[in-house]
Length: 424
Image 1 (tube, rainbow, N blue to C red):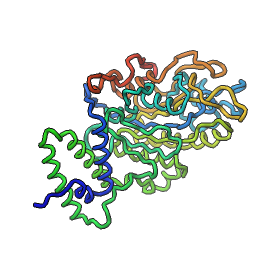
Image 2: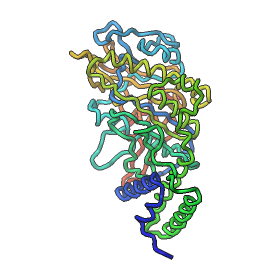
Image 3: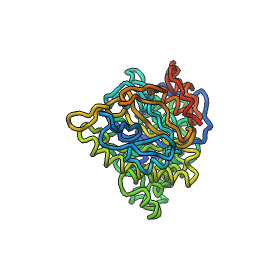
Image 4: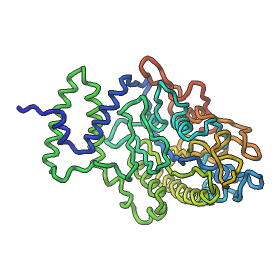
């Protein structure tokens, strides 16, 4: 039998598979201290993570201050929760507030994009010695059933204002999300046109034979397992290409979400959740409104209002909202002061986020800011508290530990407090 070299063998594997295998190999080599879970989670819940990249304004959305010098030109409007008002740019959301949990008391301290994105994405400030996994990665790891061929985490992040990709940190390649950054479907997962089905099956059988040989070798077992897991996921996605095509949805459903990129991406997210993907992230960019804050938010919030309302209705009608936590976050909010360019700058001392669905007490507003929205006066939460509360809402112990080398690392900071008032 002729000896086949590694480079020759990989040249015969579909491009998407090769990329996944090589990525696993690189990350595994770079992270020798593979973590291990202390306790496995059996929670059936799912998560939809909506990231408003750049920093959405709480004043124009969840915590309006009409009539104050900080308030801006927009009114506050009544909602279907007695006594609760939100910004006038969200009339549709206002009639769905009984399904939402709004937090008006985030105080996270960091107002530089990259550092703040790291903080909110992981629940911790960035450290030079440990690369912490993004919350969505950890949620996907904990909520994974370990069954099926679809990925545990799909991140739809088609914006240049992303600042931070969903990264597995020290968890390594086995927990790498599928990133949809240039297209709304995974790239390079079709069988090459010059390779027929029989040839593809024969090569798959040969690869499996090699896998068995590598798995029998203790010295290379971990890497071989990484390769085999990556190949299984890629093969599964090759069979699931139609799932990523929102044009297969009835025209009525497409019209419901609208034709904006955000609408299309949220419709895709619903399809992925319905298919059983544990965690999906959708990013909506360009909220960094240092100039013309009010005109930019008139456009951004109006689109958000339509799409988010359609998404909530769709999830509820399909029975998905009961088991899906929907969380809406930015890296920070916007300043009470309106600058000389009619904009709002970065502000992390007092801002807002929102939740819906599984694990959260619906129809409530938590926390309070002062009359000008400059300080939190009730229910202050930091990034660690937020992370701990998110984990708790889907049935995950925030103090569960992963082992990184000799160091046990809890999912949320040990000093974090769970806001139990938010939980159902």
